[in-house]
Image 1 (cartoon, rainbow, N blue to C red):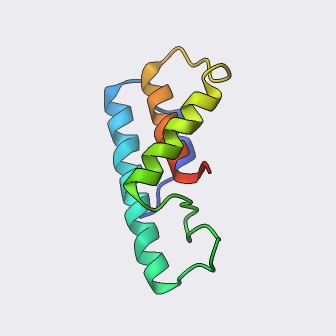
Image 2 (cartoon, rainbow, N blue to C red; image 1 turned 30 degrees about the vertical axis):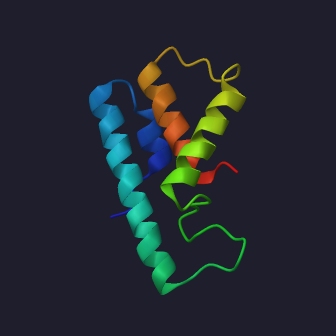
Length: 94
């Protein structure tokens, strides 16, 4: 079942909602891998569900890069939300 990751990200306010978001992000990745196996994307195109970074290394590196690039812009007082935003960015940030 697809998740609305944007909505779940908005709802991150505490540890429990952060963990729900992380689980949904994981499921989104697995759904993406299955869909990409059925319908491979063209070279240099994002995968079916928009994953630009398909390895754990690329995912973590790009999330960290986004975090560094936005540390002066994203002033969320909630560290759980900030952490979820960094992980979400690992999906698409290049």
